[in-house]
Each structure stands twice: as structure tokens, then as C-alpha cells.
Length: 344
Image 1 (cartoon, helix red, strand yellow):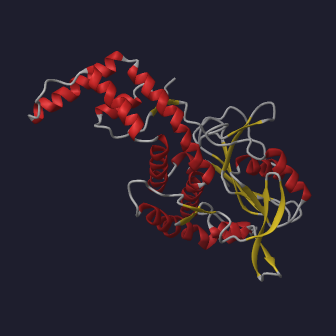
Image 2: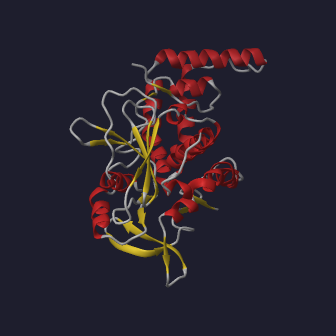
Image 3: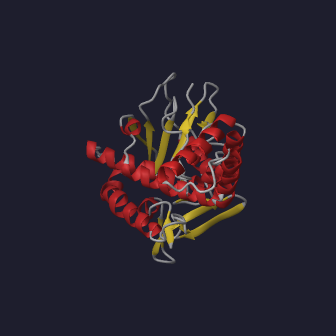
């Protein structure tokens, strides 16, 4: 099925009323191409098989239904109000928007593709395990004990060679792409179940602009950055990193700017429209959208497209601790366990 990576109602905020088609349309900006005038909010951010679970054929439809019913519809009820000057946020609305922002960050195609760099991480984890004789021997002892307790010992205890062969077979049998997709689906489910307290408790502001200088939105609309002392931006920071800022354009006239409740070593500056639009282009997987045709917007997209490619230039998982990743899998009967963050 085709799943929405950006909610239709949010895209409609950036649409214009086209007299030719008598429907809402978007100006679509793409790297290396001229702007296209009639992208439909209904199909602009739909991807086939986006939430597919290789082990659960029903999971994609389940996630799509839950995303719409539990997280999009509550926000849709007041989404259009945010662009109005009299908008008032309540605690309930902030909680709803916290889930909305978190899920929008995770559900983009750019974020899903970032999971595929686990292929290199997987090879790295396997090598760390095979090079650690203590871990290999411990797994052999654990498996031998399991066999003894089950009464299934027939041909002696498990050897280190058997463990090594099993680890290599596991890595080869469960393809990194499949595991990455499974991990991605679990990420979405986790974001549905647990509110990000640091995001919710942060400082929230709604930055406004004028119709002649609008915000754009990309197919990866939630962007994160740290503004460095030099004035440059470090893109793709996690929501809990020091000095991180989270931005989501709500309409051409309003951008949500969140400073999560994390350690801060410098004062924040008000982001400009150009800075927000450049970040949208930097995070985009394929497209940016606007309610107008603009040579300036097109130039921003062309100059910044892909600079924050997730999993490559930002939001990688190399900071996780993989020293025991394969060991934990072997000790847990082959079930994947999320690696821990490195401790300093």
C-alpha cells in the first residue's frame, strides 16, 4: 500500500487554489529541475511499502491507520489555527504536537533510508564479536548450559567454532536491509508509545513571516540543527543533543521553533526564513513544496539540496556502542537488541 510520509492536511497548508484544475496544488522544487506547478497534496508524499514489516504483512496498514487516527486527526483539528495571530497553545495541544513532530521526523523517506547504513554497522558489530574471544567463549558456555538444562545434549557441548559459524550465518541470513526495515518500523511504533519529554518541556515559539517571503516544506519537514559560534549550522542533531533546535514549518506564514529541554551553552537566535528554507532543502529526500513559484526559493533548493542527508551527513548511529551488539544477539537466541549509546 502507499503510505503518507507527510500528512495531507499539512501539505494542504502550503497549497494554492489552482483555477485550472479547480483543486489545491503545490509548487514542487527538485534538484536539477525546473519548478513543477501542479503537485497534489494527496499524492505528493506517498510512498509504496514505506511502513512494510518483512515479518508482518498487516503492519503497514495498522501503522497508517494509527498514525492518522491517533496523531494526525487530533492536530488537524487545530492545525489551521496556528497560522492565525490569536492562536493559543494548551498543554494538551503541546503534547499532541510533540507526538506529531516526533513522528514526522521519523516517518520521512529520508529517515527510513538512514536506517540502511546499518549494513556497515552490522559488519562492524560482527567483527567486534569475532575478535573478542571472551564473548565467543561465553556464548558457547551459555548455549551448552541451555542444552544441558533442556536435556537435549546428544553430541557434546557447543564449541567456539560452532558459535563463530552461527554468528556468521546469522549475519548472512538476516540481511541488513531487512533488519534495517524492521528496526525502522519499531522506531515508528516506539515514537507512538512514548512522548519525548525533553521536546515537550522545551521552549516553543511560533515564528511568523509575510506572504511575500514564505516558508517552504520538504518531504522531510522536521529539521534539526545546532547553530555554531561561527554562524554555520550542524544539521541532523538528535532531539536530546546539547544546543539542538527543532523546526517544523506549519504553513507559508508560520514555523514552529522548539528548543528542547537540554543543556545549552549559548543563546539562541531567531531563525530567518531563508535559514529555515535552506534547512528544508538540506534535509529533503526528493522534493520541497511551496504555495508560490519563486526564483529565490528555487535557488535556495538548488544550493542546499541534500546537505543534511540522514545516515550520511547527519543522524548516523555510529555513536552507538556496538562492542556487545552481536554478543547480545547470540546470548538472546538470535533476537536483535538495540545497541546502547556510548558513555563518556
